Length: 383
Image 1 (spheres, rainbow, N blue to C red):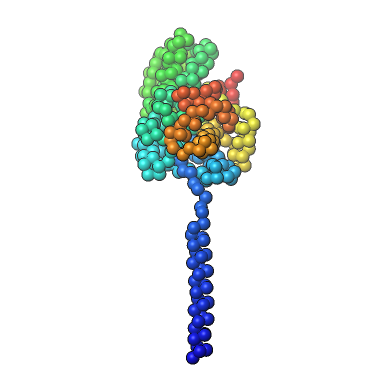
Image 2: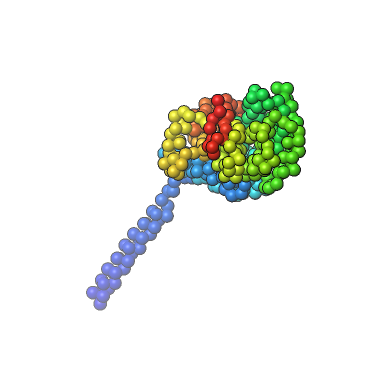
C-alpha cells in the first residue's frame, strides 16, 4: 500500500512539474512584449484610370517603408502603412479617408494622387486634425486646402507659368486649349490662361473633355477652326493618347504641348507614334546623390528605373517618418496636431526629389519643372 502511494505521489509530482512548466512557458510567450507599431494611412489609385501612377507610387512607398523598418523603425516602433484604393474617384477617396480616420484612427495619411481626390478628402483631414501629405497632387487650389494639408510636388500654378513662358518665347502667340474637366485640368488650364495673357498671348479657343471619353473630334474641329499657332492639351494620359491619334486624323500640324500628366508610359502606349514631337513639362528630375542612391535601390528591387511618381512617394514616406520621429523625440504624443506643427518646420530635407521646404500653405518651395519632348518614342529633355 505504501509503495502504491509512493508511486501515485511520484506521478502527481511529475504532472505538477510539467503543468507548472507549461503554464510558465505559455505565460512567457503570451506576454512577450511585441514591438510597438505606428500606423498611418495611404490613399492612391491602385486601379482605375490613374493606376499607372498609383502602382509606381506604391513601389516607392514600399521601398521607403522597408528601409525605415530595417533601420529600427521610428523610435523603435515599426511603421505600418494601411493602403486604400481611391481608383482616382472622389467618392472612393472620401470613403477611404473616413475609414482611416474613424476606424483606424491614424494621425497622418499620405495621399491622394489625383488632385480631385485630395481636394475631396482635405476637409475631412482638417476637421479631424489629421495630417494629409500628398506625394503627387499638384492642383493650384490645394494651396488653399487648409492647415493640415502638405504636398511634395509643386503647384500647377508654377507649372502653368513655365509652360506659358515657354510657348510664348517660342513665338506662338495664339493658343487653343483642350483640357480634362477635373480639378487638375481646370487648375492647369486656368493658371495657364492667366499667365499667357499676362505675356500678351491670345487664347483663341477653349474646349473641355470628360475623363473616360473616347471621341474628341468635335472639340478638335472647333479648335482647329480657330487657327491657333499652337495647341495645349492638359489631359490625363489615356485621353491624351486618343486626342493625339484623332488630331493626326484631322491633319493637325501646329505644335502640341501637354503637362506633367503626360510624363508616364501610359501616354506613349495610348498614342503610339502620334506622340512624337509632343512637348510637355514635368517636375524636374533631381540628379543629386540622394536621388542616385534611391534610384540604385529602386532598380535593384524592381528591375527598372524609377519615375518621378515613385520618387515623390518615397520622399513622402521619409518626410512623414522624420516628422513623427521629431515629435516623439520632443516627448509629445503622435497626434495630428503635433505632427502638423512639426511638419511645418521641415526645412531643406534632402530626398529623391531634391530639397523640400514647406511654405505657409504646405507647398514645397524652390522645386522646378523640366521641359521635355517625345522623339522616336523616347522622352528627351529640351534645353
